Length: 223
Image (cartoon, rainbow, N blue to C red; front, top):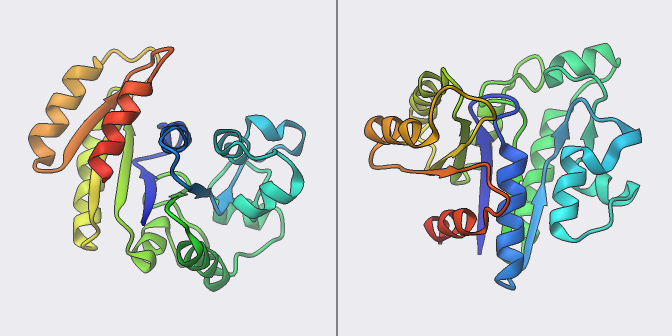
């Protein structure tokens, strides 16, 4: 039985895309898979299906309704900024202990595969004192580090690896999700990151109509 934390080098690098792709792969393999994205910002109640929890629920084959969204993403903010800023703007406050407890309960209740998706990059503040890094350190789950292929991603990725190593967190693989319109070729980006990140596996997910093979390769690295 497997629980994996999907984190990223920053916002909009493809964490939800990668999480949803893995969900669909595990479902095709008849695996019992579930997902949790405890916190989301920029959540629009009028466009739930396009939201991160909506995309994950669609991949899980679950109805995209209020109960399911509450189950998969209990902390939702409408303001599209970092969680601590969003909470302040909406006159709310995160109970960090309750937040971490939700993850622990999901891990304990999993039947087979559980994917927990983070928010933003690894150092995004959750409240006045805690970051995503602190959350991951509390859970001690193996990580998938998702990054893009945009110009600058190599520095961002290697910096993230350095920070994660200081917390002794286990990185299963680095996933380079191809960025649209990037001047940096995906294959060259993978090659350069691989050279500095060895022995960690680096796999690319190209922007193709069918990414089934790419996600099958990624899933094989996780077993």
